[in-house]
Amino acid sequence: MTTPPIESKDRIYRSPAGIVGGVLLLAIIGWLGVDALVSGHDRTPWLALAGLILAVPLVVAFTIRPAVYANADRLRIRNPFRVVVLPWGEIATLRSGYSNEAVTKAGAKFQLWAVPVSLRARKKAARREARAASEAAGAQRGGGRSGGLGLGGGLGGFGGGMGAGGTRGGIAPGGSTRAESDQIMSDLRELLEAGEQAESAQGEVTVRWAYEVIAPAVAGAVLLAILLATG
Image 1 (cartoon, one colour):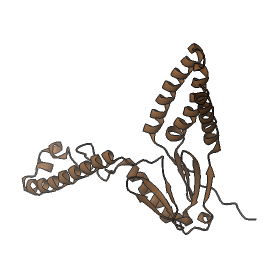
Image 2 (cartoon, one colour):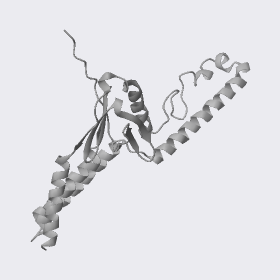
Image 3 (cartoon, helix red, strand yellow):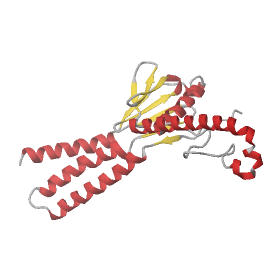
């Protein structure tokens, strides 16, 4: 009797800023839309209804919906209008530039909406890394000069304030100074390298359109167009 393989648990990556922004936008749209539905006159409630049917799915699609799920066998990308399942064996590379993308061996490219690139975060991370390197070099030079004075041992705890486990500038030794999106892509590349040859990580790339988002948005757009055309 063979034991069925145990499916590994998904790692889930989402954009907290996108979710917060989406919730705020939905609150504003809901407030304005409901107010127009209740207090509007003539065609205003119908226009408000059509606008809500159109806007709410789009806001959810571009802010709250995007997510990336990764386990030992595959990468699943939930983008605004599509869900893409990529076995690791079908992925050629995970590329980072102005956006983060998964590139298949067939040449197809799929953007990771849930892991947006922040150039500002990259610049901040580069400054942190440069500052950490400068401080480490300064600590080494200072340690060499003070070694003959016995500051570490002769003054008890005075020289131990920056011991092996100490930190400066808010950066722990060995801690990552990379931008969060770059660190996520590094984690995904490790999963790719570990799983691309596994038998369970082979298969076909599947793409499913998110009709649960597309259908109401199209219905809202059609209703709004009809109301505007007949007005």
